[in-house]
Length: 281
Image (cartoon, rainbow, N blue to C red; front, side):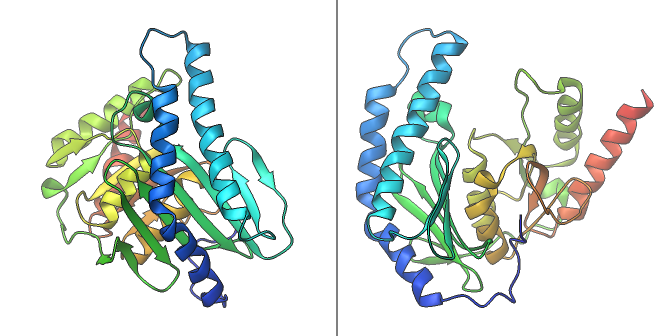
């Protein structure tokens, strides 16, 4: 995967703007569609793991189909990469990366913390990112080199420079996680940070960092669908993201630390110390 942070790329800004405006013009159509799908699929009873996965997959599938049709009807030669349906081939240098519903369990349970992530690549570099939050009808968007915006307002990360004053969003365990490692990380940040939050939508977490609501997050096994739009949003809002070693991310999935850049080194140091202590025990 090519770098998401190249400012040297020459790309057709007018074409990128044209595509961004198409999404913005259809904001309410997108929001109404996602709520129609939610009404059909929301969970109201006990489900087995298999049944639950069917619901989750259907939510992504229905919304993916809608978004691909909405975009491809106007931009017939563009490529697509979708989390569910995979790659759809095109005939030009543009490729859309779509995470149709990030925070799918929240979506199915009618918890309003979910979003739609759409990024646009030009010759394998992300040049535009769009995140839609249906519950508030808000849209975050950015174009490479043009700054980060929420609705019509330019946004930037917070100026918090001390970890003990920072609001953090935690990595969180699932059934397949290394519980000992994750609980140790959370404990370390509880004792060093100001407070910890958890939304259930990693893309929304990054939007909140980009606009300065919270200051940092760490997460494992992050993929390009999570980072495509939100990663560029963080970059253009003057934030920072690396892997757990503080290195640039060159491929996914990857561990990711995202911050307002001022506390980035402090987060990395806490993770390093925690992992060293685990290895000693």
